[in-house]
Amino acid sequence: MKIPETVIFTKNCLMEYKVSDVKPAVQIHTCRNCKHQFAGKICNQCGEKVFEEKQLTAKHFFHQVIDFFYHWESKVLKTIKLNTFKPGFITKQNLNGIRVPYAKPVQLYLVMSIIFFLGVTKIGSKDYIPTMFDYQYYSLSDYGFLKWAKPADEAIESRIFKMINDKQSEIADGLSKTSTPNSKLDTAGGLWLKSRLVTDSLYITKAQMPVYINNTAGKILNLKFSSSIATYGKSLIFLILPFMAAFIFLLFFKKIKYYGSALTLSVHFMVYNMLVYLVTSAIFYLPIKWFHSNAGSYFMAPFEWIFYNKITEPVSSFVFGQSFEFMHLVFWMPWFFIAFKRLFNTVWWKNLLISWLCSRVFFYLIFGVLKKALITFTIWSMH
Image 1 (cartoon, rainbow, N blue to C red):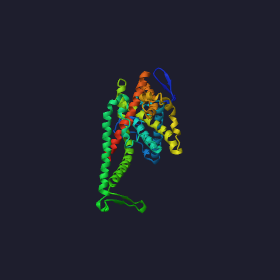
Image 2: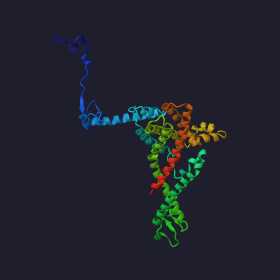
Image 3: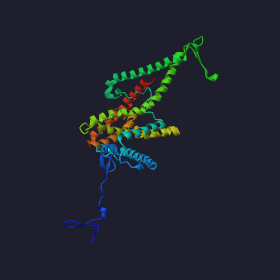
Image 4: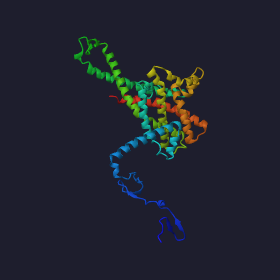
């Protein structure tokens, strides 16, 4: 008698099964890269995927391109959204080893930086791209309890001012040698600057020559500085991240085992900060740009009325700084408070104090330290 294929005899019993329940044999592959043998589609030794000839077709190529951009975009947008509305969640997921569903910190930061600087350039906001004389603002001695740091601040500012003067003098010397040779001067030592239109011609007397050359050198310096600082500001802003991470690491050294954990949190904070600043800049500047209206200023008006009226201004300035700094703290402190609570479960009053401290320190690092460093480096690197 023929036994059905759905029945099998064992020693003591009769057991029924379905052919569909039988698992196919595991296929073993040999990695073309490291020669390691493995099961599945990815080598567990080096990460190389199993190669099939159909991957060489044009159809597969374009499918990979579309798939990459679709999943990459969805990952980045998902991560930005969670990082904004659930502070500390993405950081906690990263620290717990759950990383595949989200954009990597470095990838996220680079993408947000590109979006940020393209956005603020289009909007016209320049708070994160310093002008040449921004080194005079946001010094350490501006904080009441750090007045003792004024000599150091003045020394730094004097050094930057000297660098600017030296660079302008250098440009002026070059102009004197190239644009005013004796053959071009008239008998009185003056110079005619002629254009194609006689009406545009300009005569500069001998006495006016040094002033004209110096003014021209100043304009050239400003043009060179503006073009260079825009590039350096976009590429060197990431240098502030290690300092932020170091500060967080010191504050929570009992709860953070590795410095990299604090660095991840710093990256997520900066991504949030760039997004918030981009949105608030659009609210402030676009009405002016498009409609010549100051309607955007009403966005912060309620805070100004409450915290910076004649009665509350002295206290608010001491606790939160001036209104520009306060505008940042309004958005930063709640994010830090929720993130620290989610990550470290600190007591609410201690969490509030640490959130305030981080916000004020980070504001100084970005608008004090980073701006001065960018201005110094830009002036130094100009040719």
